[in-house]
View 1: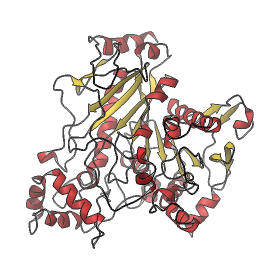
View 2: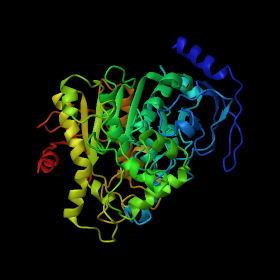
View 3: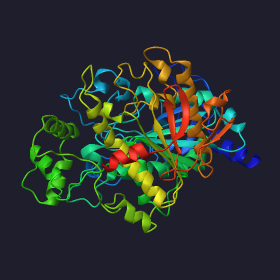
View 4: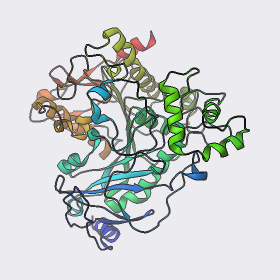
Length: 516
């Protein structure tokens, strides 16, 4: 305890700490707001909405991937003066589809990213308790390092439903870090002239390395980093242990609604050449083509890709993770049976009505059959990975989320759609539409407790105490330990089905539907 306090104070209090005023925020003066990192000194702030949380928003972990670094492997950020980390960073260049109408564009806009986008986007943001509250702990705090979703085409930190300041304010027992990474063409170019095709996934790895090297100065435990993601972020988390079997760095993995099956196959590498032709770089060799496209303005590239895809032009063109046999592989089971996967414990699961997030929006919905088919886009890769991990004897905790709350799912057919669990996990469910119900708060607290319990000690597995009501736990006890997933057993945790907070059930219905 004493050695931790001395090291921690030396790291974050040796610098004079002043909060820097920022428009639209009531900033307080506090300790630990100027932190030394490998990217330079980072200036954070504390505001009145979360007065016990230090926020460091927009911390660079890589050099801007522009010019010759466009499409290239990320380079670690070199110090260049104090970074005023006071606002969420720009998102990476976003692919858009103006012709698409979904539940997110019509009702759930809080899941979409706000603010600007830029090629200079490789930043992360940190939410940590105040120094004095960390000092009262017996050890440095567990860290949740979050990878946002967005289908590998869009996404970023700046969306309402996944801002964790109030969660950290309430618990004072963990640190949350959210990263940006390059998406679409900029993250997954798959160009013939490149050595690395999945540079967006390499961005994620560099962010993990940055957190390992620096989070101790914010009060975090470098040996208790849990890599967590949702949707494409979950797909990223699930492929991660296959790419770094000997040095995963992280102690735990959490994959909400995503598995390794979410990859793109462009073996002929024609997509990049097609796009190059749209921006005046046609008829060139691979090196000349790459050099030409690197000189085209980023927004011109993004517009060309978005309009081509949005208009349904044939042949289709997509830029997502591709098999490179470095970080993405063609046969995950073979990789596992050959022992080339980190044995990192994982929570993995999906939602009961994922498909509502993928169909075109109509007020009355597309019908049960269409929703069930679209739900398989997520549930089947999740089921396959859970089964794969069971075969490989990798510690796995499987869940299904069924919550259906009117402030999050305002139309009856929305149900537990893709991403709908995030407001409960981040503690933001009460910030929009109608008030949250008491049951909704119970579900939120229970899920947060399990995710945090896992982050505290992934080798132990998730566990929680009852919320003053033994009926809140599947085994009717005051203490619930989530059992490891075993194929064929009733050990999948079903969350918020009807009025039941948690229950252990079989995954057979999901798995059988995926085999049809």
